[in-house]
Amino acid sequence: MTTPSSLNRELITVWRQPLQHQTKACVWLLAFIIAALWTGCAAAPSTPARKPSVVSEVALVGKVVMVNSTARFVVLTFPLGQLPAIDQRLDVYRDGLKVGEVKVSAWQREDSVVGDITVGDCQTGDKAWAK
Image (cartoon, rainbow, N blue to C red; front, side, top):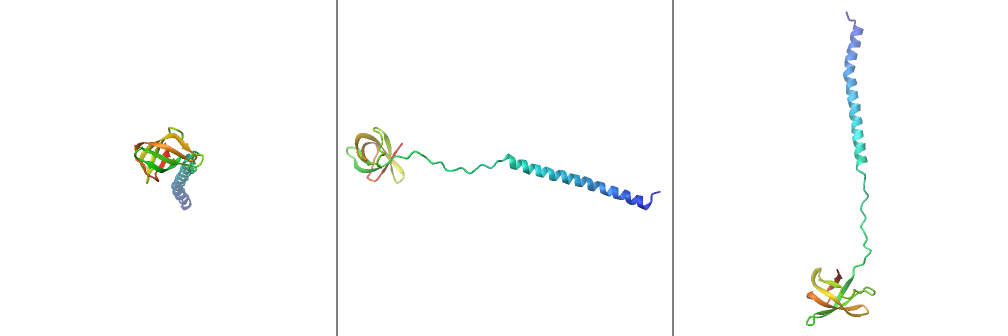
């Protein structure tokens, strides 16, 4: 026959067994979550923000100062020390839209060059950009 104290011990051991299993399951779940978070952070290294690249090459930009539409040539001025090469082709833009193309001729003086209009048309104030 079981005594009350032995019955209490049996009830306590039966009652503790499910708690021990639940505790072990919680510990394993917590360990899994920590491992997943830790490896997830380690797997995705933070990349530094990309810095904008600085172009070392200065764009060659000239301005149309005179146009002879019957002879189809223009006179362009450029910043000092930045003249285009002979026979270089330049795109001509007006208000951001390409309106023509110019081929630089051999006529150069100081900051001015003469170019033949090969495509489109030009007006005074247009910008000529090197290709």
